[in-house]
Image 1 (cartoon, rainbow, N blue to C red):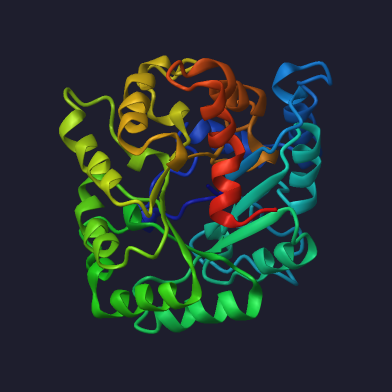
Image 2 (cartoon, rainbow, N blue to C red):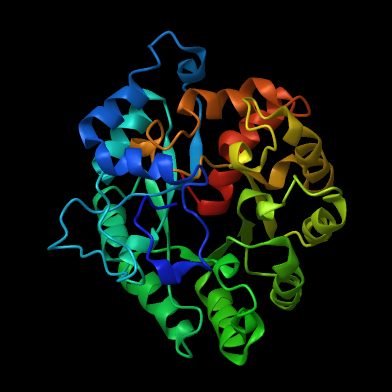
Length: 335
């Protein structure tokens, strides 16, 4: 999720920080070096969270360019980030914490121009896979998918219906049908940032196109503060019957009503998801640019790793290996 200034007219967009304007102000005031150093140097070489050298894949990470002339920040509604989050900074963090690979998800500040993402994939093809952004309302959306996948090494796209509340007709439009057909042909993977009321529309497409893998972010942003979240959560669990649907165990810090690590008030919901989807279709993702964790008040990477390795009680040791690495390696073809 990008750390950006929001324009007043963007009220339908979610708050990218999830921690309020104070965190946003801190990010814009901080220096890139200080933020990155403090977030990564907190863990020593003896830290058990980074001692495991086995396969470890973060399936939800963002980077953005440090060169606005070469890779412009194309979305006019967002100012250029004030903190660096280049792919080289990410690799430093990955290496320190023994993260072997990442799935890069295009950030909104570069909008529909995935050039910097493509640059990262070309420069470090063994470490990364990439999901771009394309305008889902574009009638030529299938052509855009083909262009970025065939010309620039992207493996798929991320779509964000959550930004289109009451404007999400594109999800099941004729252009969307062509998009999913093209995805079948190209072997694309789709990533959805979606709210629970929108899941039935996604289910229509999942049912129609069983060969297209679909990854759902952040437990579909279920609101656990409501009096009874279960009816809405059932819409996510209903997708478990489709073997092409995967779910990310990500952003529990945002979903947790208490917001207190290790967010144990979310564990019963993770268990429901585990029982429905099974450990082979669950993925780990931190959902935040590594260079900005501390200034945004987000969990440390040590906490994110410990969450899977130690804290969530329903995971067996074998489950943890799958969720932290082998499932993603199979889906995104990391070798």
